[in-house]
Length: 68
Image (cartoon, rainbow, N blue to C red; front, side, top):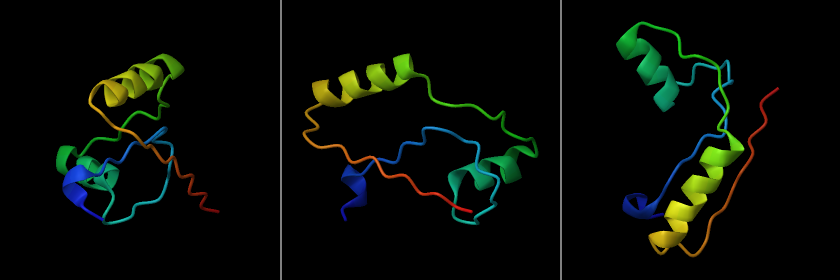
């Protein structure tokens, strides 16, 4: 995978794991503050999709990873 052309979008930050490679974990470590638990709104997601389309993106894959 070419990471220069890849995109990671998080629909929610409600995960309670502390994976060392996760950007959320790094942000908490750097700021020493918890992140508020929130979800990406439908309106913001639609705006995001519009921007992707305008920039020429032709394919978007959404993957759900469920951790028990």
